[in-house]
Image (cartoon, rainbow, N blue to C red):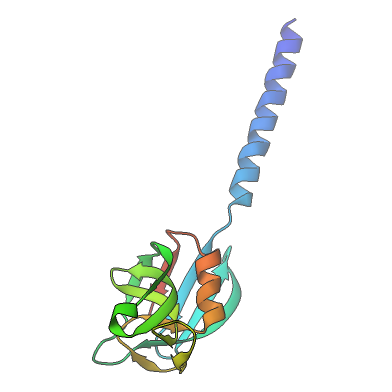
Length: 147
């Protein structure tokens, strides 16, 4: 009887260790790094480089802030009341967002599709496909490093 109990406890301990190992190894996460000088967003997945996106960052008078932040809400559009629309927005911090290039108020036509420049009011503008990718793949709380 004691041998059976010891064997069962050993099996339970081994299975517990396997589960913990699986959880630790199976944890998936993204990190985003924005290089303001080169106007690029670098995406890392489990510490491995995944992709790079050309972006616009803030102009000198309204710079994109430096620092480490964590993404917030995503998936919204804004600006219609001001005569334009930006789609697939994801909060970086405060009013600083990832979002698409600028569309007309209806969201049908791109009115400013420039990328790779320091021309925004501080947000990080992206090609439509890239902003949509961030919205669809980057979970809330993802680390964003801006240098």
